[in-house]
Amino acid sequence: MTKYILPALLIAITWASAQRVVGYYPQWVQSSFPVERIDFSVITHVIHAFAWPNADGSISHYDNMLDPDIATVVHQNGRKLLLSFGGGGNNEGFAAMVSTIDNRQNFISNLLDLMDNYGYDGVDLDWEHPSNSTETNNLTLLVQELRDAFDSVNPEFLITMAVGASNWSGQHYEYEIINENLDWFSMMGYDFHGSWSSHAGHNAPLYQSPPGDPDGAVHTGVNYLVNTRNIPAAKLNLGVPFYGKRFNASAINGSYSGTVTDIWYDEAAGLVAAGQEYYWDEDAHCPYLLNASHNQLVTFDDPSSIQAKAEYVKQRELGGMMIWALGYDLVNGAQELIESIGLHYLGFHSERNNILPQDIVIQIFPNPFNNQCTIRLISSKPADILYIYSIDGRLINSIFKRTIKRSAQEFLWDGKEKDKKDIASGIFVAVAKSGDRIFSNKVLYLK
Image (cartoon, rainbow, N blue to C red; front, side):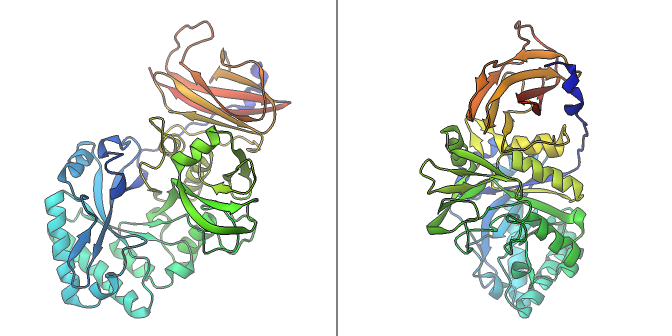
């Protein structure tokens, strides 16, 4: 390996400090993932989930959910905290609550009391979904009345909304009108396939797989909301899932049987580490796994697919990214998907190499690091690995010199040269070589 490979490894660095990264923080992770564990270097807004409206405008919420200490921690880190209403299973009271001005005003009054008592900086509306024109009009009225009430108390209070990625879910929203009073929309860029779909497809494909799949993808959803429904791109966040789907199936986009279940990223990462077969779908820009018996398939997002989506957000000049849900990606103390967003969306950003991900995928975490990092290589072909180069092409270390067979393996790098000399902080490149092809990923070392 010499400097002749450098043109393939040149890294274009950009820094952007103003993007939104919105993370949903559900009640059921509070005990295992306390608010102090949220990575506030990445997350700009925490959305606490879920409360829900009752028909008369009173408010209910999950048990043991509300805690003023949550706002204290969020605010000490200079971030905002919103309270989310609704979610997939808490929508029954919306239609009646919005149906009269008295109910709406009662809801707004109760909401302001909650915000005052627990330190919330705004409200997130996740009604899934209005189902007729009357509910459409009443939701628009609620948003207008919320904005008026917030402006009279604190004009910096935020109003946001989670929205679906298709006309099926979006037909009963007056997006162009409510946009005037909303700070942003977050597109739920997931659940494109599940128990309701005809085949075992990706949970969150960036592009349709197979091409033309009527179930859609992130790209078709963004086009619908921005181009058809006229939501300004700068006010749209792309929602990414920190979970996937498990199908009883033998092939991606094939038939399946039985129950489809959700699987958090931490469990999917465990399956990768245990040696389940890893595949990369170039149409979807997403991975999937097959077990040894080829009768169970898991589709999920990993650091590489999150990178692809982060770059898509930049290319489309969207307003930010949204995460469902914080705490789902905690693996051996690291938050791997959060780190991918921090690296590829907020921080040092490399143009994607022209690689075929099904050959070799290089994942690095934590990234940046200041003690040691784990370099995970997922390979479908034998490769001579693993080298660390400086940004100017100098060989720093050879972590592993023998040929690795097809598998997922992990290696540690302690930020030292091959002779164990310390190195200065900077950007380095992990390189794997398979035949005449080069694969790389960057890592930031901070002493």
